[in-house]
Image (tube, rainbow, N blue to C red):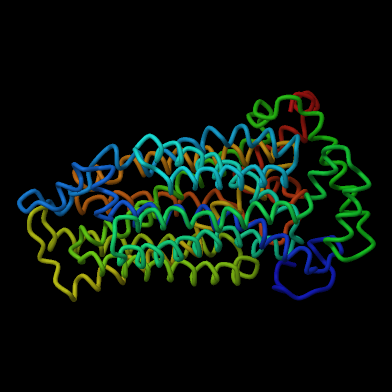
Length: 511
């Protein structure tokens, strides 16, 4: 049921569906929101290690890095203002996601993506033209609003447009675009760091306008999802779009299921209060835990600060940007692995295998750095430097085919329609909250915990692998509106939250 890759024919789960060019093009255009998000993650780390940028906005960090005798292997970038430059974006995103929850429900997925594109464009102008720290931070906050809106609307759009049997693959396009954005940013940082003159960082930040334009144009071209149109009472338009994206005339069974789901959804007057009801608890717990765990793998710490991290580990400036470009390439290729396997092997297999690989990679990095890299002495020779890079790549690869894409895919497909927009909002909120915490704290943690920071993340990886083993069910090949019947009511632990609704009429009325 889940296999079949990109072949055409019937059987989007139990529904007749072909894989139409319209679906593929719509999903590629929508997932350019991920390109913007990834570009921003990648560009921040490179820009914050550029001397001209530091001299202009963070003179104390510049002084710490350029004056002999003030250098420390682990503390050279420990500065709250510098961390705020990176993390203010995520603070803005976690506030914006609640506004985006309202717009995705009442205005649709398409308009919310358009708003995200506009936020991205205005924020990019502020950043590229910044003459003081205030302009920089305002630009970052506007970009954060774009991230909040895009990360709310795009995964929902992808899950609702895709036929069931390739829903995983198409949804992971969002994460693939994120990884491509990070890689492109790394390459641009490498180029602009070579430029003579003080404005290389402006070019790095200004080129974010390209993915921002792609998302803005893409959101004007795509149609809204049938689920969104039907939920807003546009029945005929919703049915016509469903026929177009499925490529068949017989869409009645899927159409009726969406109508029934949206009828139930429209009866919900308080979506966030509805989320707390007993029958939504399993999905809510998994969505929140997956976002927290995704950040506690340590991936964003490595991706944000890859150039800074490799410089700290003793790689010279060019080599550090080069090394982070290698990890960026590994990230992209491994996400392609995920696209291939997610609807074949399933979600759980990828999460469990990666848990073991990430844990072992971080333990090796901890041991090597613990023995060879002291705060004021760097005995990390060429060979061991390469070894650290190899295991960082191993860690990045396993994350990129598991927690990276599945951290967005699983929450977007497990909620019933009446809780889906609010559920996605809570997922994005927790993702951005923990991204903010890690971005704000990482350089200080690196300074104080030194090599122990990798052990800290390894312990969390161990915990999340146990969580996956016992509590995350398999969702491959299950139609999105049938999760309750086919997944939650059959899970060894979570079924108790469903049985009460089914067996107890009083509970049913309350839930």
